[in-house]
Image (cartoon, rainbow, N blue to C red):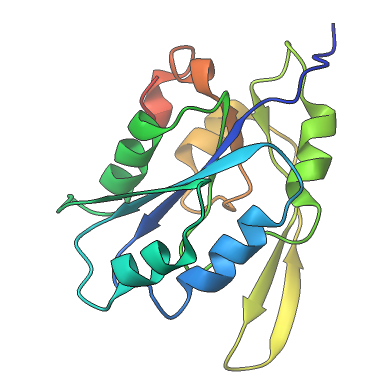
Amino acid sequence: MITTARPLISVVVPSLNSSEFLPNALRSALGQGVELEVVIQDGGSTDGTHHMVAALQEPRIRFFSGQDSGQADAINRAVAHARGDWMVWLNADDVLVDGALQSVTTALDDCVDFVYGDALLLVREEKRSATVPRTTFRLPRILSATWVCDLLRQRRDSATVVPGLGWAG
């Protein structure tokens, strides 16, 4: 059965001294046209990141700060604070293309635990881009991959099904 209610999506953003890039990431998330919250877990930035986020006065953004053990720990902390049924990991220096989450919500139903797709790799210094295509989904490959595009979306309760993913359930 396809879910008719729009699920709350939590966009979790690990951050450390990201004030240069974070505004673009936040704009890209907040402009998706879906029900969402953005949960920023900051590792104790000293570059004004907190002030930049506070100045936005955006009620959909929740900011948490404190020393962590690196990016994976920051993601897990953000997920622990998240309220959404679905998690999207967005690095502070990445952006979501227009309509990305709108497309994802059309694929969600009670039988889906993960949704992922193509990524667009932008190299600012070289002013070029390339599409990183999705591959056939194989859970062991995703869990053991050295690099997976941040377009992985996970249903919150699937962490209990796949504990190796490391996200809090």
